[in-house]
Image (cartoon, rainbow, N blue to C red; front, side):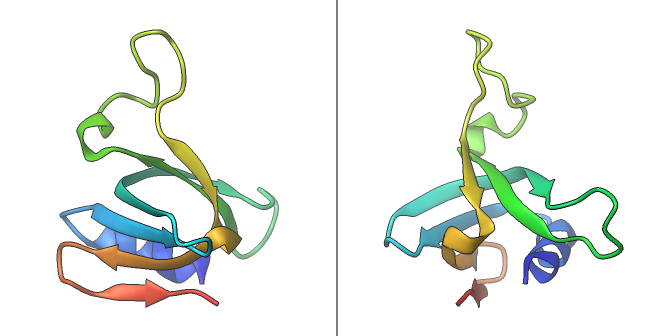
Length: 93
């Protein structure tokens, strides 16, 4: 499912999403990066996503103090992602 999420996310213009985690935590923001399981794998399998507030999308992942902004979320912790652009969502089990 991570590949389908990647393909959907890179195909839309408005990248604002709401992420619902399996513990019912909700985050609203932008996915600005990801971590693959194995660089040598023949298929892309994303294990984690880097999420930032929509106002931090252009920060290059570093705040004014040199710290990483946002949150890294493991793919297997995601229950659902809602896409603001088209009102669609993806559910993960």
